[in-house]
Image 1: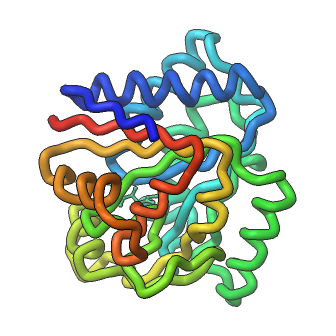
Image 2 (image 1 turned 180 degrees about the vertical axis):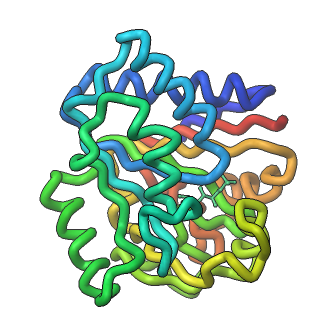
Image 3 (image 1 turned 180 degrees about the horizontal axis):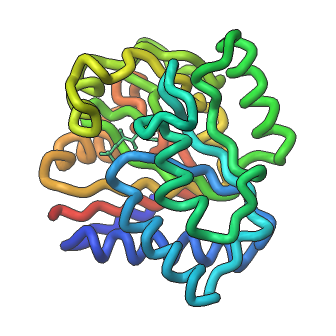
Length: 236
Ligand code: F6R
């Protein structure tokens, strides 16, 4: 594991966008696993700037996102599809039909989960997976559990996750209570994993996840077993 500690969110975003940029340059047809939330916003901003400057070309890239809320379709401004389109996809030269987010409105969510795993497999897996981390140690929406769940699955969101994500909604009651998330299997099979986190509030969970025991009660701790993991933490 490469654990990089930096002082500021700007430094974190600079290093993260450089790592993703290097991946795209090294393999223009790569598969990027992407995350939503507040942590990657600076990284995405830098990627947009680099693309606008002609330094990065996303025309060959395929993306697979980690998760989506159940019941929100892509036109809902709280959905993760909407987040990705707004903050990244429509601002870079990626072709939208090569961007994938689980469909949280599928009639048959079990079938949707199976389809998502088949899709990732058909793409040959993920070259670089970007992750944030929840205050409870979740990655994607793999919440603390008795076991690590390998496959894409539907999950009930932990009360602490609903609480944390309420900041993006009009009220806590508007936060969906379940989501579809990529499982630990596809994340661990990604060739490279890049996890970013910032703020003093994440310090304790970062310690637990990367220097504590490996346990499904702290889902991110499984990443200690990944052969090519970079973690960037900005204290501010
Ligand atoms: C989002 C996701 C989540 C977030 C995590 C941290 O797609 O998969 O695991 O990365 O909840 O969120 P922020 O970055 O908002 O602190």
